[in-house]
Image 1: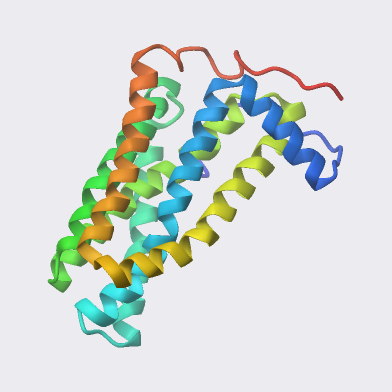
Image 2: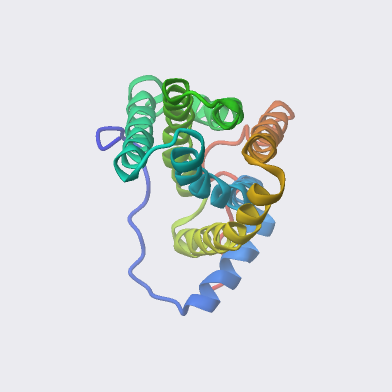
Length: 229
């Protein structure tokens, strides 16, 4: 990823109050179709992301009957998958903008598939494989998420857009811990896993449908507007 070259303007040195940054980021999101779509997908996956964080220790302790070291292995596989996904991004997607837009949506679909399969398995080795493949998809999504926001916003609003994105995604994820924990207890891991996989699937499909309709065909920063200073 460090060797992947994406052109971007030099960031501004001006600082804005956090609340003002969120407000201006929101105004930009209402104008900019790509930014709005990325933020909405981030909110959707943030609601499901808390369920993933809870799933790993649940699988380790209740399904695979592992102790602390075994659960640590699952988190190590998680990290390895993300690194592999980032490497695949550098190797195969590089700085091809159209390819990046397509694979952002496709990776949500593959993430959905392997997440759902992960929640259905009760075999450790199969679970490790599904976890790894799911996180490879995440390793592609994470840098592309940043790339799409960077290349479709002007320098003057970029920081404010990121503030809004991180605040909405992180805030919703924190709330989802409570909901996910309760649903795991009430419905069980397989059913909740299917639900979370469905959310990821809908994120990917909505993105690809918009791409098919030509919503993302503009060149980077072409649809970005500068907010009043």
